Length: 142
Ligand SMILES: CC(C)(COP(=O)(O)OP(=O)(O)OC[C@H]1O[C@@H](n2cnc3c(N)ncnc32)[C@H](O)[C@@H]1OP(=O)(O)O)[C@@H](O)C(=O)NCCC(=O)NCCS
Image 1 (tube, rainbow, N blue to C red):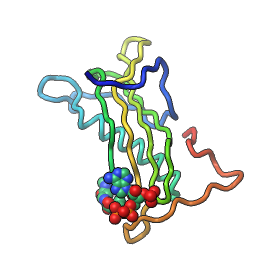
Image 2 (cartoon, protein in one colour):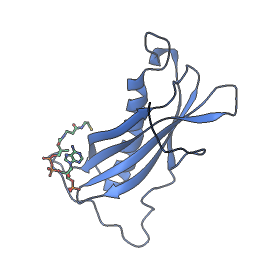
Image 3 (cartoon, rainbow, N blue to C red):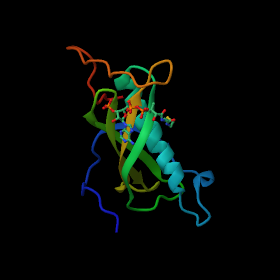
């Protein structure tokens, strides 16, 4: 059985919101897990590029769990939070929440940890830039 941190409200910064469409489904009619992962990767990539102040690439995805299916028409919201920084890499915890189109009810459907590496112009790892006083927050409200 998938395990995840129990939570009643999303954790992290709202980064992407999108409506699941019929073209996003698997043969069983639910939204395709790969589509959800791609939205999570896009959201994490947005946060990583902001922190890296430039190009960053996904190097690993860990602990990804699918807790509930997503249906066509659901409003899908992705939240991101930087939870670890190394020299060139960072880990971003990503949660996906759904809201059924005609209700106020929301629930967490996936979460996982995406690790990104800041890259230079030759696609090699580069150090994360230091955070200076007055810089925008590491987990920005976008
Ligand atoms: C990202 C990439 C440049 C890293 O190259 P590399 O030779 O492994 O680099 P390094 O060994 O110097 O590691 C760089 C950092 O990544 C981390 N890292 C490497 N592999 C990792 C893994 N599997 N899981 C977590 N972190 C990892 C290292 O710990 C290091 O972090 P640190 O500097 O914060 O300590 C290379 O793996 C790559 O190009 N991968 C493909 C990326 C890609 O195409 N992604 C999909 C599209 S965005």
